[in-house]
Image 1 (cartoon, rainbow, N blue to C red):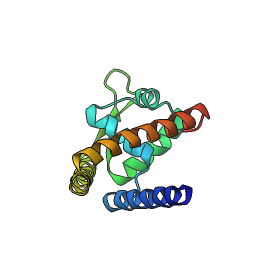
Image 2 (image 1 turned 45 degrees about the vertical axis):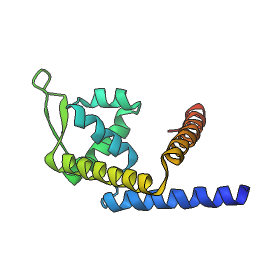
Image 3 (image 1 turned 60 degrees about the vertical axis):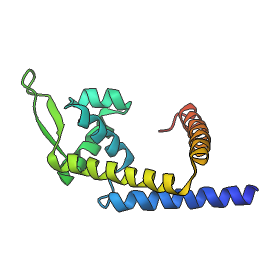
Amino acid sequence: MDNKLKKILSELQCELVAERNLVNPEAVSWLQYDILSLLRIKAYLPKELSKHLGISKSKLSKNLAGLHTLGYISQKPDLLDRREMITDLTEKGQKFLTETDNKHNELLVDAQASLTNEEQQLFAQLSEKFVSELRERRLSNGTK
């Protein structure tokens, strides 16, 4: 069973990465995706983004520069403190998130078509358990 589980976990990871690459041709990182997702809610100052994401300002700055280069975000001076830059999602950034949402919906439809209701519930339950374990282990090791 160990070899079968190892094989299927590897195949699942490969398939999910391949699916992600279809909708992410510009190789937006997971952190950049998290930034865009926050900006979908509202515009933020960099210090607010840094706090929400639990990352250093320098790491945030590097990722914001990449998103700016892609045209996914815009930055303009804050009206209250012109030294601060308000970061917002551009139309291109919103389109990227919408296309990603559409791809997630396609995966949902595929899962619903290939699994019975009971299998879907079991898959969700087991996946949630495994994701929690991975996240807990990663966070307890201090890596992100």
